[in-house]
Image (cartoon, rainbow, N blue to C red; front, top):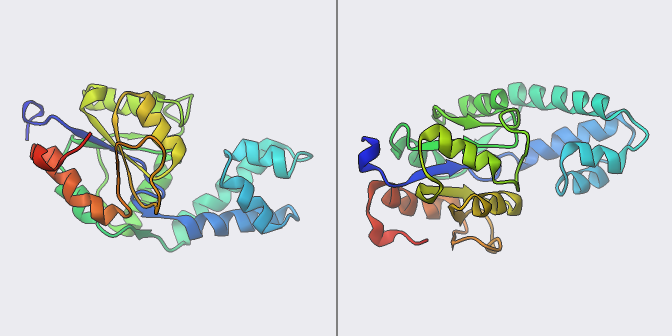
Length: 218
């Protein structure tokens, strides 16, 4: 399908949207906490709400944050190699059903980990991945989503963002894009459309990209 026939591009968050990595993240942070003699539950509750460097400042202010980050990266890389991952129901059908060049991944993680997780779960990898290294400003800044759109050759108004988290939703909205929320019992504030599960959203996303606007909402 050529770009002239396509009027919607889809930009996906990864963790929590396409891949269920909650148990992996909990295990990684739990191991990290043990290494520093901290309570795993307390650390994980902070990590859920903050970025790693902010988490270290809160839970281990007397430690070198660079050392803390290196340890976390070591544990995350090991988890990608040995951990058990699962794609959300519908993810494979959805990604395989999208035209090449019509979609991208926008993640706060690192590309090599995303590729490892996709390999483990059998999901196809797109030509465009905007990761933590690709931009100086992460979500909720609009920069990651705007960078992905530019790399696809798309205008913001042509892009549909699929997200599960408030920071990602805000990033998509600030980029001037349509944002649909998935995998949450309650809609994240600001989303144009909400789906309790990714599976529920699959036919609507595919219909929008195919040009069947009778099933699309913005």
